[in-house]
Length: 392
Image (cartoon, rainbow, N blue to C red; front, side, top):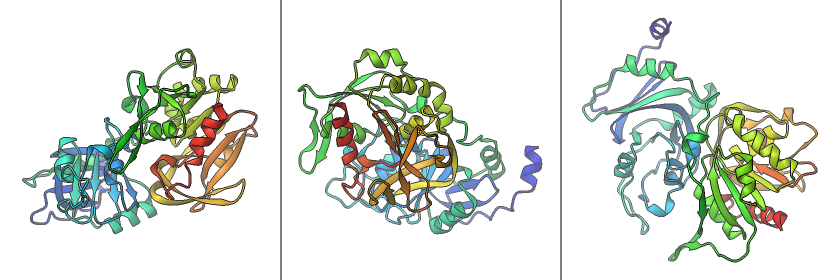
């Protein structure tokens, strides 16, 4: 069957002279370019991100696990990289696709160049691609599975790459949270960053204790919880309910993360349901928001193209205020499926998809977007303060 499928693929474009990288889509289309970063090949779902800043944060966000990120902004690499802008020490995106060649860094915070940094992380880059055309293709046909490859000698077995792209099962049904989660509990000590001072430290005064379940968390979420007045302990994704309760939380935070929420829900939902039964305050972001919805009787679904960027308008239904948000998700809570126990609190002004919920009669809420990413830039920080106040 695989060989028959390959025979119906579009005829690949001939490799241009000097091409050292290639992106092979599962539908048979082949995009040639110039490879940088790590040498090798990687498989994943191709998505696009429209943010004008934050390429290093994107590449180290665990929510991008098993994804190849197309950056629509042309100037990628121009501010270099530094250790302060890492969102996690575990895997994020497997590769990136850009329009222009990465230029030398020009920024006072830079501590290195983007290309060599990608190579050190085992991540592939591909330049010289018409990212506008690729983005339009994703918008029209959905996010495709693909293989990206980089070989300085320019030698590629395109049929083999196409077969690998078609054999990859895709993100639907895939539980990735347990692969990118911390494996041991950790008392979080960092606070938010300020220019010239770096990251602050968490106070040791008697603050409400948050147990944060790590499904693939961005570190800046924990920093913002500390800034809002909490003390944070981070635990692995598969931590059972009795272990969470043993830490005596004043509230439980459900983090962002990658993969299919329905698959992660197999072990996450029973824990969250136990928290709701005890009326422990719960706050979820992104995948954590989806987990909360599943625990209260909602459903989730794979999106056609997903939402990824730093300029997504979201309407808060309680007062019609519009928040400018940062998003990164390929699955969404199905707002048609919401039972009476779930109140819809926020919706996307792009397509009307669900962006926030509250559980009726419980101290529990979640949002699909990322308030810690400073969109707006402070439109959504109130959510952290709301959670801390709820615990008091």
